[in-house]
Image 1 (cartoon, helix red, strand yellow):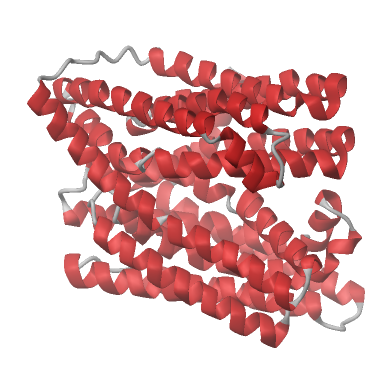
Image 2 (cartoon, one colour):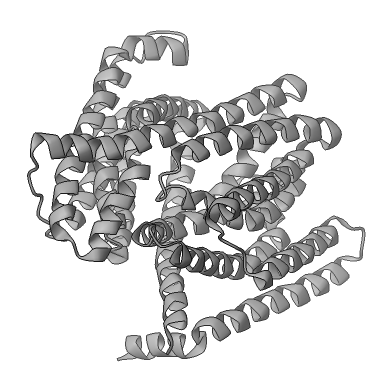
Length: 496
């Protein structure tokens, strides 16, 4: 087997493992959310959402983007086998994690009264916010441990830490909600953070990596390298958050809270269920980029491999998602949410074009292109905001899905222009043609679902397209990495 096939297999294996983890986590989240919604009702869900949103905002500002920037330092040293440098990076990183975690916890503790007033309009939740400072601190420590597993590309430990942490939290928190009801929200959130921290710490400690104490000058040099880039990436993420907030306000003022609900629910499905593939890929993809960040030729190979593999994996999934979009909506929500169906159809197509945008965006992280990342974030947020305002006025909720699609096409074009111009990194022509062809097929499937054709005709067309999409992706993957022998070897290994 040549090197190229081995690399494709590596990408596929990592995505398959982490995709399975994400699927398992989603199933746990569905069970947990269903139980919580029944036991707490809308009021309890609202309280939990506001508490987690407020503490999450504090965490976003105080973690200083370390999870973005430190990944390069860890992955690069680990890939080279330079355990001296790795030990020094871990020594500095652990202290940065503790400092940022304590910073977030202290801010939450000191502002607990104000947070309650700003969030709920009263001071009834002052003690709740004070207690949640514990959760905020432990969450940052958890992210630090997971970052090390990710940087060392230990996919198995990373997957086990995620699965076990979520599994334990399910069995700890649901009985607590059953016993205490709304009063269990804060204790459950704290217990959730404890269980995930313990699992992440356990698997991180199994790597048996040794921290090497650094002198003051070296400590300042490494920490400065991590924090300066991290702060820039963290600041850049502020603009998409603000754009998302303003879009919801705009929809509320021009269409009402019902449309805001459709927008939130629709993109919760897209980002949580279709978008799980991106979460799975990021765990392996960014460390691979970081490991070869000084070699532009290798970077081009890694980027094109990732784009090619990603669209081949996503294509049949998006076709299935569009075909069964109404059923998914009914299972997760209710028939009252059917007006958002067309929005998630076009949003699903947008997920396909998110692939090149996401792959090129991740390229900027190991390259420490913080200024470019910052500028792209502003430009992307402004374009997305403008498209949403325009297309919502034209087509209502459906326009929000089309806006999502156009925004990712725009972002992918701009990021490719910049990276091609500066680093001479190119798309594979075949990949572009495949992407456009897949997009055309998905548009056809969307038209089928919205047409007035006889039901059995739509079902027949859906079945044919679904089979063709699956066969095409399978055959292409097989040509890239000998998928059939790979699957047979795994199945035979399990039988033994």
